Image (cartoon, rainbow, N blue to C red; front, side, top):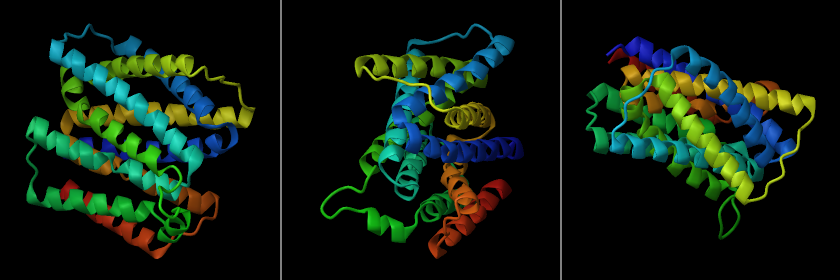
Length: 289
């Protein structure tokens, strides 16, 4: 396997999604999650059409692959809807780490569906990254404050739904990208995602208004970064195990927190610093294997 290439792409996806989530959260707080997700996904679809036109080739599908593609596309956009809704209700420190746990579901499904066998150091590295994601993404002080007595913390239930949906979607990407290639896979999944999204908008009779220029810019940049991240993720799957790629990409919340610390002056507590160290150690172990 071309470890350096695949891991580099996974890191690029991680950074892109981390920045995109930071920008999306700022926009959601201003215009709500429904308008935000529509603009984000619509903008992301434009470069997908352009890239697909350059690299298009007619795919060949088996009935099983058709089913996997539909399921991956639909669950992917369901994840976005509930992730954005969770951001609209709660804090990043609560929603992001729960949602980032999609990688655990993806790894377990990959081991079950594709019989992926990891080397011992890779297993340690993956576990280290998983632990790091939780600690780096969570401010335990804020988490305790946000938990309601006898109930869910704000946005947590939505984050759990997003976690499950994305865990399924990303696990199914491997056979799709292997058959039709990363670019066509992204095009097909986004076609399904956009169709599902606008069907949901129609059924719920959601009114989408054009936001202020700055908010539109934030969502547009987030959409472009989403496109870059998804494409890098798909190409990474061409050379890497699903479990390795997922472990790296799932560290995106650490990027979001770093941006919040730099630009919003949010404090990084001790457990978050330890989480970042665990992530770095995990990435090194995965890379050296």
